[in-house]
Image 1 (cartoon, rainbow, N blue to C red):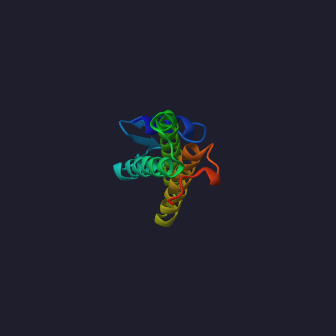
Image 2 (cartoon, one colour):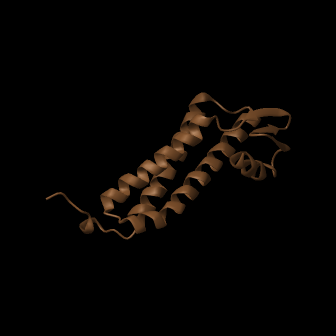
Length: 132
């Protein structure tokens, strides 16, 4: 519902948008917001990326935990932007399955890239814990 509400705010300048539960009514067209698979998959991928990069960078528990809010923010922001773009395309009749998949993949890559950057920040190439 949070994703739907923030997407509604972002779409308001261009469309007449009402939130109905976790769906959006855009100019009379009901659009179901974020089938559970996409948002949940983005969260899983974001947190997996955080764990993998933290391990690679040799992050301690405290440093890892301090970066976790950035992971949550990146996942939420990426999901909202992905959803907003997809709802806008659907509302204008320009949405195609290929475009839908492409936007989803670009959003996922951006989120995972941001998460990796946040977890690796401050670790130079030579500070990595290489196996010896």
